[in-house]
Structure formats: C-alpha cells, structure tokens
Length: 241
Image (tube, rainbow, N blue to C red; front, side, top):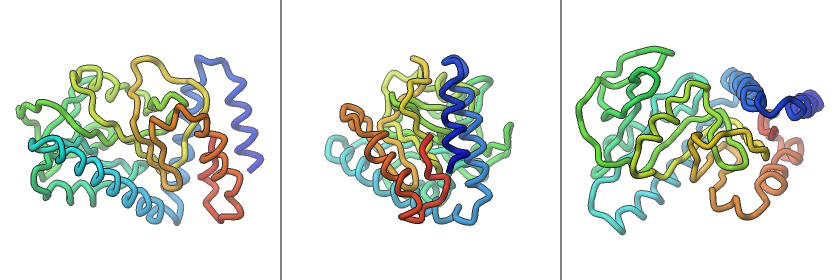
C-alpha cells in the first residue's frame, strides 16, 4: 500500500509535460500484474456483465428513436485488455446490429465489418479482412484504455490511432472506455485532441460523464473503493492513482 502511495506522490511531483507518460507507464505495469493474476477471469466476468448491461440499455434507447440498424465499434483484445470476444461474437449474431472493428492504415485506422477468419497484423493485433464497405456513422464505440483523467479523456497506448480516427468523424458516437484497473486520475493530463468518454467501465466502478458536474469522482466513489480495499477484500490493483 505504501509503495503505491509513494509512487503516486512521485508522479505528482514530475513536470506537467511528463505526467501523461508517467501515468501511461504506471498503468501499463499495473495491467501486466492484472494480466498475470489469478483473478483475471473474475475481473473480466465483472466487466462483461457491466458492459453487456450498458449496451442493452443504449440499444434499447436507440430502437425507440430510430428504425435503422445500430452500429457498434468493438475491438479485438490484446492480452492486457479486457477480453470482449464473448460479447463481440454474441452481438455479431444479433439482428439490426452492425459490428465493426479497427483496421490499421498507417498511423491511424479505418473500420471494417467484423468477419471471420481474422488475420494477425502489427503489434499482435487481429483484424478482419479489408473492406470497402461505407458506413454512415458509428453509434457506440467501445474503446480499450490504459486510464482516464478528470476530464474523462483517454490515456492511451501512445500511438494516437484512436485520436486520429475519431477526429475524422462528423457524428460523434457514445464512447465507452473499458479497463481492468481503476486507472483514474483527478488531474488534467490529457490534451484537446484526446478522445473523451461518455462512460468509463472498470471491474469495481463505472462512471458517467455527467457525474463530472458533481465533485465526487475521486473523493467519493473511487476514494471509497480505495480506502475500503482491505475491509472488502478487493485486490491490490483496485487502488486509485
């Protein structure tokens, strides 16, 4: 507990321009610990239930206002990311739901329909075959993230692909950040071009952008989880940073 606390203080003292990279490295190390932990399946189970519940709610709301199919951008997970394959394949079979995944193009990506078989590409990422399918808009985007700052903006892996892609969209989708750790900081360490989320889902806390107007993100929900970690017998990686 003390080592995590002191590492947090050390990060705070660094110059502002280095903060984002410091948090990024800290979060990567923490996700590696989670990836190797015995509770990995349990954490992914909790994430799966929360994400499925939110998606059903958003899909239901969409059906009330539109007869058009709903488009959802998923991702194919890396080892350090929440394993969404069960939900991905489940929603792929659903009627009136179009499922897309990223297809890397240089320093950014485009989106293609999720079709099997997948091919392994750079960075160990699995992709569907290239397609010329034209999409009008994405309604929901599920985005893996290392963490999030107080402005609900993404701390990503440092390549900027999601930032470049979302900058090209005329219609901004409902963004859902998802992470195995409660990687939230009450500081502003992101920039204007960074992707902003509407929802942030972690195994033990789910936050909404509208919660931002109540000053309770760090000191109530997340702080409560952090301070009551031992009493509730939660894993060490539920510590906020």
